[in-house]
Length: 81
Image: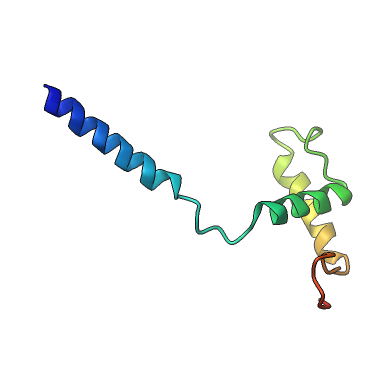
């Protein structure tokens, strides 16, 4: 019985290790996601106002308005977009 418990503990640690790296390959940084949220909020999206039924339409409308705006380089970027 003790060997079964040890085997389960080892398996749990192995699974937890694998799952902790599940999103390591994401192409966006946390700062980029925060910047995207600031942009859609500036375009009129209010997360506190959106209901479960209006969420997709609200965020898509704000993203559409953002995409029509001229692009501005982030302040840390030295190149023009």
